[in-house]
Image 1: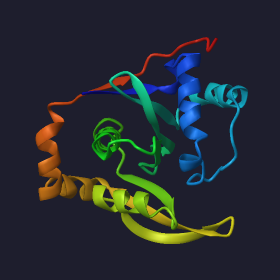
Image 2: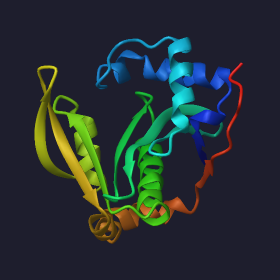
Image 3: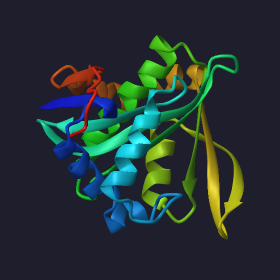
Length: 192
């Protein structure tokens, strides 16, 4: 198994179409803040804005096939924090999700040297909430958006270190060395 975490700026137009198909699927769309279907032109215009320094968006590939996306936003080196978000195919193996998210969390705390990750999940998205709790996020509050309650989550570097020492994580980490996980950061100048 090979997992690639590839910067969205380096994807081809064909790969952007594949990612957008996942993003526009009903399964993913209904769990997002923005539930509208996004057309390719709007998506590519949005991609051009990703060159800012306080956001990082990646496509996740499993054996060369795009299976989801993961991102860091609101990266703040003064407050040492960022927001984490992700979405994947409905039928994706949870091990791939777990490894991808873990790799990005590790990047946040060890490469970017931030101290806190925040996120939010719709209260109705019980599977994502269970996943977030299992990987080490803690509930820090609630907020109402568009008539729906969202759960606010936080993970600290200390909490991540402690989670990495848990029996659950140690069992998972036994297999992590059998999986090749690669970050691809190169930029593609033209989407066409």
